[in-house]
Image (cartoon, helix red, strand yellow):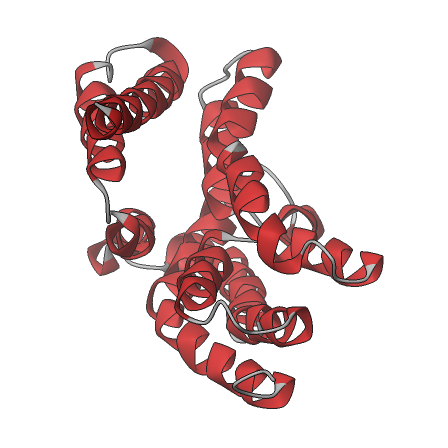
Amino acid sequence: MPSTTPKKAYASGIRAGLPFLIVVVPFGAIFGVIGMEAGLNLVEVMGFSVLVIAGGAQITALQLMQDNAPTVIVLATALAVNARMAMYSASMAPHVGTAPLWQKALISYLLVDQSYAASVLKYEEKPQWDVRTKVAYFLGTITPVAPMWYLGTLAGALAGTAIPESWSLDVAVPLAFLAIVAPGLRTPAHMAAAFVALVASLLLAWMPFSTGVIVAGMLGMVAGAETERALAARGAG
């Protein structure tokens, strides 16, 4: 018997998603401003935000377009930034993989950093929940986030350059990822991957069109995998 109902899990998910609004709204506003500055019109900015719903990849792509980066670099970098979604999906599959197809499609569309981080932590805490309850919790986490992401984008696009630079909304971008990544650093492998990726991204900042971020991400993954392998070998010995 599940320890809660889907309805209660959905309400719990909403409560878990609410704190993310502190960074999601300014994050969306930043994308709206950058989109208009990049020459997109309001419909294109909102279409980009609604269809893609991937803040990091969206901002990265627009900034590279503003820097007149080659199309292949724009696509490769945006895909690299969003490659984490493949890992998110693999991590979610054991929990919601048997849900109906339409629910899995909805989860795929709404799978963002915030909904993933909140859901996986809860799934590990409540492994006895059935699939319906886990899906309900996931949908709860995204319920406050997605609409406010869209509204944040709209506000940024409409306000444009009228937003004072002194507001420093751009600080929301690193804060958003720090808030998501920090609770997940629970093993030496996690910490090694994060540390190597951080240091490498700083050392490789000189690379053109922010390609250092891609290399840093790959180095971080290698460091994490090697750390886990070494620890497993030590445990087996």
